[in-house]
Image 1 (cartoon, one colour):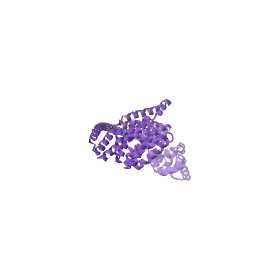
Image 2 (cartoon, rainbow, N blue to C red):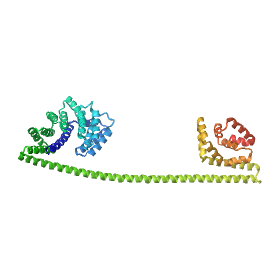
Image 3 (spheres, one colour):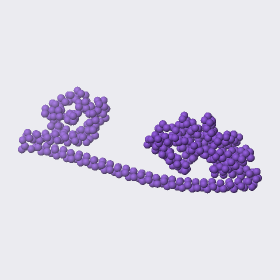
Image 4 (cartoon, helix red, strand yellow):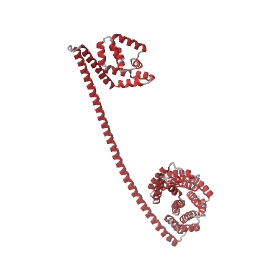
Length: 488
């Protein structure tokens, strides 16, 4: 029972000691950065400073998540700043908040970033950062790693001859050795810590810790002396631990009157601590409840947003489908209208060719107009096809690309030309029966303003063959028609 209580007391006091030391040092450190920022101006810097002070207020009230959020906002505004001192201070405060939330690895990363920023400019702050890193390892029982950082901090503090630093680091090293059961070494380092002047709160905490160590070394009289000093502490945890240790020691010595006296004091402070912890647990439960409510609200809001996005997507998809169907219907109507007009054009041509009462010259002029209109209708039908688009791309392509494109799209282009200009080809074939299908294709390509190279790629023949074909067509049609086709 004696050892269990001593262990409990030590850990309690050690945690308070570390926290108290660092709170004292932090409060003792000047904050010139804030004043400098306000003097220098700059909206972004001033806003960062406001976030920082707001975060400090929440940290003092133990509202650590809110403090972290505000510190991170300040850090976001200050990233890229050349003021390493303020950035180091921000990282240190973030590390304290994460450490208070038992997020040791995250706290350790913050302390390391702060240490890297202030190493060359602020040795005192760098030393505290090393000590804080060691604290995170000690809290995780990684004692070897903690000792590495404590030794670095001790070496730096000794070089600086900084009494508060030396007190803090010696106390932490004593806590580590006590954790390892090396009570002689622990007593040596806690004694070294007490040799440096510190605040009353830190001094009494360290005395209580030394009493625990001396108790483990069976030095009862000395332990009682230091526990009595610890019992005068303003920290309720230190008082409870000291009174508990005094009760156990006097009980062991069978000094029942003193043991009962200290037991009563211990129970009073222990009950107060339990009440405080109960209130803290209740506050934590309420905070968790509020967090869960907030999460639920966010979940509901998220579901509404997702539902709204799905509905908006479906509406957009429906609009796109409707637009597609509408444009497709318009295209079909236009195609049907062109086909209808083409049939009417052919009917009018047949009617004019059989009309005998109209003068021959007037009839030929009207037939010529109908023929030109027929070509324009066929051209409109062709422009709606994929072959027309590929033919336009082929005209604009480089010579090297024309060869590749022609090999891929030749069949498509030729097929769409034959389908779209079937009436034009049919009229030429009817008037000039000796024209072959290849001749008719050549004529249409010429009417479509295709260059010689494009015609060669589409017909897939040599330049000499095209020249011969053109001469052959010249012999098969009359001069006026030939001129119309090849100089159109």
